[in-house]
Length: 231
Image 1 (cartoon, rainbow, N blue to C red):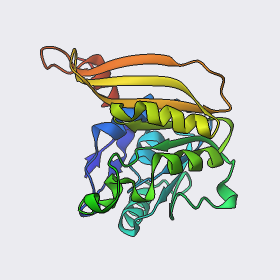
Image 2 (image 1 turned 180 degrees about the vertical axis):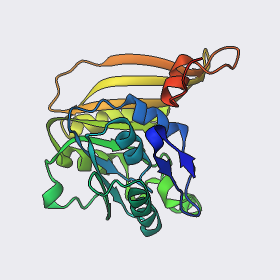
Image 3 (image 1 turned 180 degrees about the horizontal axis):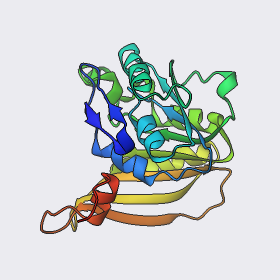
């Protein structure tokens, strides 16, 4: 069991991936409007939804998850944390967005698969490969789900940056913020977080952060992401 801020907990189904830096950094990066209605695309066992609900007592999160085991894990986490009125998980293919979800959300979030699909990736768990969630499909679903002016947030690998911005542009999602994350100050970029806006005007804000300083000590950014109180 993982302990999250404000007394929330996350229990992972057998075989599920542990709570990752990717999810923690993305949840920290997201800016929610008041009383935000959020759609988590590829929501797993509800990690991002729990982190956002722990941070914002007024947001509501719907998760779309294709794997039944992960979906059931999300339902268990929702009940265990008493979030039935604020969170939901739907076991479905995010590429088949239902009409009742179209144009209804203020924000979409996603910690998507990073690895290409196909026969060579058959041994990689489905949650980590793009067979059912290519960047083009992910952005198309986000664009359909968002209200005009709504924001799509995702975390990914830096080598996919150009592709991600291009895919967003194809469906009227304009890149507005880019966070470059280094594991160690002065080291290579290991993660990126992007904010896209449906119908947004051109203009990209660049941010940078490191999890550890040159002495391998946690930075203020790391402590903020992991909700570590300063002495």
